[in-house]
Length: 346
Image: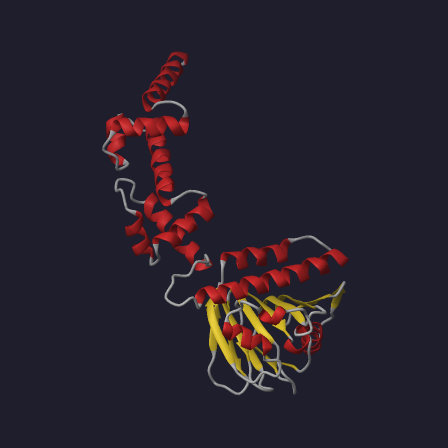
């Protein structure tokens, strides 16, 4: 199925798509919403335009057939920040055969040249959640942008290119902040005027995060500082690695290398997910396992210390008491007393 969009700004884009789908448009204080007809798929498309020249459109849907949305109009196209939260889509410029796949947690920044448009490809039967910040630069220029001071030179030129002289394409993995912000936009329960204000504020916040992320990626030889969603997948890998090998004391450097990341990123990820350093998380897992063995197994304390990769019983007793408030020996004695009481009762 092909959908042709030949209008701007975002609110008119949504109306144009609804017309192609033969669907109704719900207007919620400026935020337009279209439900996908059941014979085409399921889900919603919604969008909103702001006086600043910025708009926000999101496609949260699953089509029952391949769908192409062609953005082709006889004027300069917006600067687009597109990010994929679920599924995948493809993008190409209107007069190009080069498709760029945008997978889950990836984003692109694109600007066509002249009046050249864009095409988005949605695969059938794929649940997809894709959002786009769209900036009409000729309108956005009327804001007090302070000559885009301290902005990356490439982005500065891109924002000031109101007539779209140059084509631009960038692809990266979007940040944790972007993912959290997307969740906020989709779950906050504001309505009416407050919803409109909320969305405009979040649109500017998302633009700030996207620009910061681009500058982070282009930061020369320095390692990226911003935590990406893909970094959390590496945290999950390391956490499972630790859980599956309690008898070994793996170094943070070794774990980072195995996961394909660096120590700083791994530590930052563990702090974000567990509010612990990698070593503190490892200690927590080992102590939890030791407590379960004390409670359920017939192993003595020395055997348990060895099984969790420690070789110092005194150190084990110290950290166990710090965490649980009692010593391992007292814990064992308590278990024995409980068993004796149960035996006497029976």
